[in-house]
Image 1 (cartoon, helix red, strand yellow):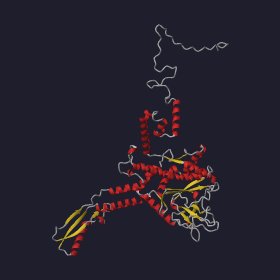
Image 2 (tube, rainbow, N blue to C red):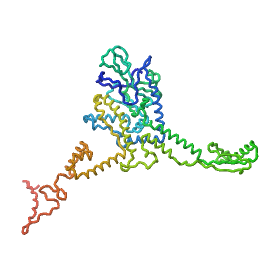
Image 3 (cartoon, rainbow, N blue to C red):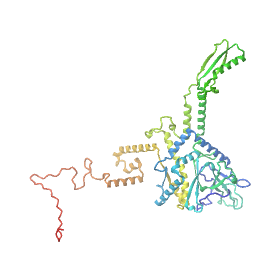
Image 4 (tube, rainbow, N blue to C red):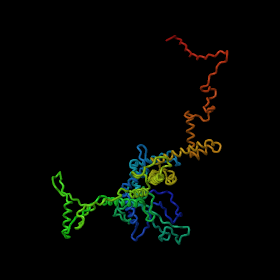
Length: 565
């Protein structure tokens, strides 16, 4: 357990040791810092945190099997990733990257190979769903140890219940040999400017059996294994319980709402089973019989009416068809002499059994907790409105932004794997990747009708506004102002559109706006040519019209000197 499994990528230029801070670096991924302690060796107390995470993941997976919760999860996954027959669910976008076309093509090819190793085009739905439910996703980067420059050879999925991310503080010693107890200490023998800072080691603990990995790092007998950070590609949901320091899933907010829905459904079933049927009350006249004989007579009457002998046509037997249902039992009451004799009355069943207002309330509460619009409940409401964007529910707008955030968070997985692949193959350096990282984006395939409606309606409103402003262009507004502020065209779009217009004018697809026109707005012919449809010039009175000159006959070639052949 002392050695790390896997590989690590180290930067050539180390950070200056004079740059120190009492606040450690964190990605806000729920990973705490654990300090070495104990007299007999290393110890990392992660048992309490991991037990919590282990139990939470089990609860999340149980929640995903509930019909209402599963329907909401499917809505989120289907919106985030669109599976198309011809197009990939996600593509890399490098338009903002300042690099050569050759480098961009190499990056695109490497990203395509990463998707093939993950089998992402075929398993994208399962991968995204597992990440959404568990709140975390782990992949092991398998490389050829002898030839690491060949890059990642395989990506293997790891169950999150078997992994734990750990940051451990490594104590160093000062110049005088004294151990440094705190993260940032000023030794008495050092000057005020010489500070010492304890190092941080990051790694993963892998347990082959889905059980609690114990806190002891020396627990090799229990099958735990330390894996280097760079060997694991991981992505979390971004939700962290700040009190307990554990990563949460997007299903965490719906735990209480789902439990309430389950309880109200169970109580409704019990109430309807117990109150729905009608019950009968038998008043049996026992006269002046003593108490013991009255009870015996009552039991005889009960057995006489309750024991029904039925004939089984298949076996030819006569058997007793008594059914024991305690909730549906009738009432048998004795009645003394002087009463109204034997009587049978009926108790009505429960009333208002068709009301489902409480069930619908908790269903809507569950969907709100999961971030899914209430209109998407199966069979509820009037369905999703596909009209104008102004008529679309505000929940749908919030849902589209929520899905966009999920995509951006999930894309960190691709970024991590792509970084490792490019560095192993020596395509880029770590310094180059730091500069390129922010300019690499991922384009997910959209299938949101709301986005199309919104874009079409915005364009329609802009063109309508442009029509109203047209008399004032050149007087109060410039053409550039209108294109940038009204039509919202960028500088790149303006250049591209102008080039396309010039090309179509040269090909004759569009008329030349600079060509002269007549009073009616029709284009005039070129100079020297008669306008189309103009009357021909007539000769003056007494003037002999000139006959049109006949075309010259082609010259007959001379016969060869030898005569005709």
